[in-house]
Length: 176
Image (tube, rainbow, N blue to C red; front, side, top):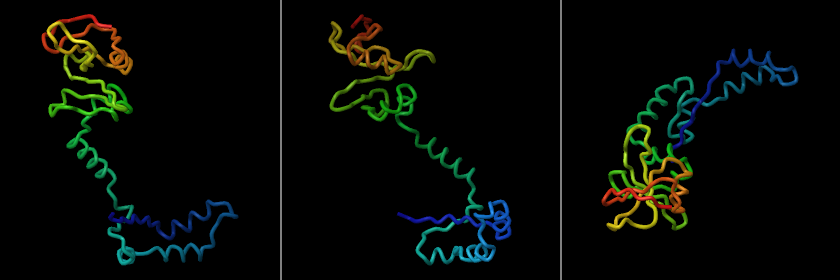
């Protein structure tokens, strides 16, 4: 693991001035402050001690670092971001896509699964469907719209509040 030293150097006159704002019982003698200030190792000394990198805290561009981190996250987005937003962090941790197109996936906990599929739709429609038990007369799987953890639980129990859609023939059936 590479080691990085961040050095926070405060000018000596500022260190000495700060002593006057402290209660008398907490002040450090000026000669001790001067000695400690002089004892802060240089960049070269820290590198010689074995640090891989040494940076002065005042020269670190924090805005650049924040922008770089955001750009990296945008270039490599969270694959389950939509699941996380829709159903929460706990369920997102148990979710994995089962296809390359990120249209099918499942929650798996302790060997039990609940399958989901992405169906898109209008901005205010529920964009996910969960597979429920049973099949259509044509033999296709049945799916119900889900948009909350409560609806996921109802689908898992095969007690959805909504009509199911056949994944094969698109017939609408009431289940539950």
